Image (cartoon, rainbow, N blue to C red; front, side, top):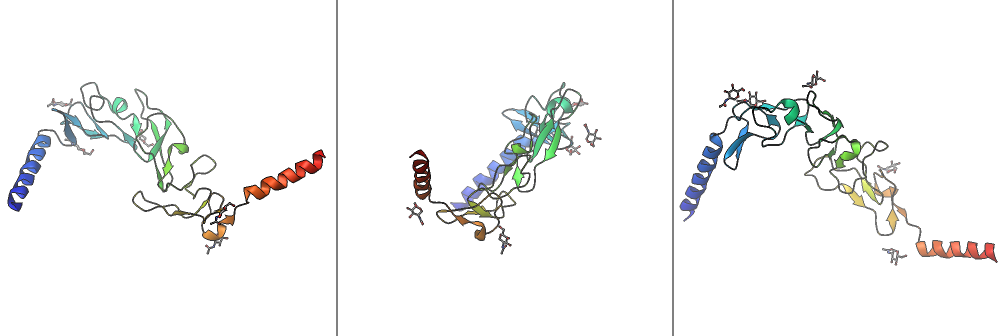
Length: 195
Ligand SMILES: *[C@@H]1O[C@H](CO)[C@@H](O)[C@H](O)[C@H]1NC(C)=O
Ligand SMILES: *[C@@H]1O[C@H](CO)[C@@H](O)[C@H](O)[C@H]1NC(C)=O
Ligand SMILES: *[C@@H]1O[C@H](CO)[C@@H](O)[C@H](O)[C@H]1NC(C)=O
Ligand SMILES: *[C@@H]1O[C@H](CO)[C@@H](O)[C@H](O)[C@H]1NC(C)=O
Ligand SMILES: *[C@@H]1O[C@H](CO)[C@@H](O)[C@H](O)[C@H]1NC(C)=O
């Protein structure tokens, strides 16, 4: 019983391996056709070179074919990089690395800014030109996770406590103003001014 399963798996591995073995190095099959793998480009699947300068290509007719050039194919930046200048027919796009603890969820080709990068920690604040490193968001404290596989390290403040962006420990969580008291106080002021 178990041997027949192992045999089936082995046969599957061999079949899958042979399916891709018909493609060149740095290439794999999509349907019945061999294309350079993503991040590579070439005139055919037996001549696939890696995109340089942190650029990236998408597997298919756009990265494999006689009229494909490194500029036409490698028009994206690798995941973890954002685009400063777009690629042209004679130049690669400019790619800048996201700050540590952040990545771009997909390869990008449109020029953008550091705000294209997203912190791994889902309780981290958005990145911007004014906030260029990952920090815990409002209402959270800690040090943001540094790798995708880590758990969140920005923890929520206790109920009815809040904190500014970038709070690193729980002593930074302060009791929230009770909005009902605040409203009553404002009404008192307004009433005393009007009457
Ligand atoms: C692949 O492209 C190279 C370079 O253009 C060429 O020399 C070679 O003959 C091509 N190989 C196949 C199998 O088409
Ligand atoms: C596969 O990619 C590597 C890395 O870019 C390159 O050195 C090598 O020549 C490629 N192989 C072929 C057959 O193009
Ligand atoms: C890659 O970057 C280097 C260093 O900035 C530069 O000299 C080179 O021209 C770039 N290559 C391409 C194909 O743009
Ligand atoms: C938080 O504040 C609300 C409204 O003032 C109150 O009803 C609730 O009991 C408070 N929760 C805690 C855990 O203090
Ligand atoms: C907690 O954070 C505050 C600033 O928010 C800092 O002054 C203090 O040194 C920190 N305490 C510890 C134990 O890290």
